[in-house]
Amino acid sequence: MHAFEHAARATQGARDYQEDASAVWAPESRSGADAPAAESGPLVAVLADGMGGHVGGALASRMVCDSFISAFGELDGERAQRLLGALRTANGAIAAKVKANPMLSGMGSTLIAAVFGAQGVEWVSVGDSPLLLYRRGEIALLNEDHSLAPELDRLVAIGRMTAEQAKADPRRHMLRSAVTGDELDLVDVSRKPLELEPGDYVILASDGLHTLETAEIARVVAAHTADGAEAVADALIRAVEAMRDPHQDNTTVIAVRPVPDGAPA
Image (cartoon, rainbow, N blue to C red):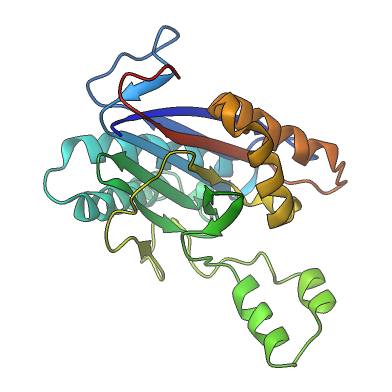
């Protein structure tokens, strides 16, 4: 499988502004409104969830996506090293922007970037934006969560707090690592490509998707697997909006699925 169908969708949620950004780049393919739904060859998808207020967060997430895509396209070598190199470039772009305009101090972003190719998918991530694999009715988290949520869940496992306390803890969404221009404390990078199978979907998302339980995400994707990436992305955003959470965060998803060569998307 060397072709990949993709679609991105977003909702502002209950926020007055949008701090998420995303980008998909297919080398050696057409771009714009007439681009094919299924791209042949490698595909790079990037999603960023900004922080730092209306202006700073939106600027940071867009800068991270744009600088990552640009740097990845210019780098050579193994994909894991290109992923890390592009991440360093994105982090450096934030540092340079803050240095030029100290009023933007404190802005930053999460980042999840995935490269799809003949051998499967490889990724790099910083922050709590999840990279999910849907396979045969189940959802698996592929990347590390760099928020405090895993630490709180560990306290639940050893009996130090209840599951309800952990879920309601205001520290749950605090980040242990983010792209802020400073040294990156935690970085998750895939050790080798994850081979994809027919029927798989890979979902890049901002943490607003956590409004849905894992089982509900699996149910939504399963109901639309045969309809393609656009249908899956649309359905996930509709499901988030249907929850009518009064504190709903921005939510963005990129859905990617492998398509056999020559098969219609």
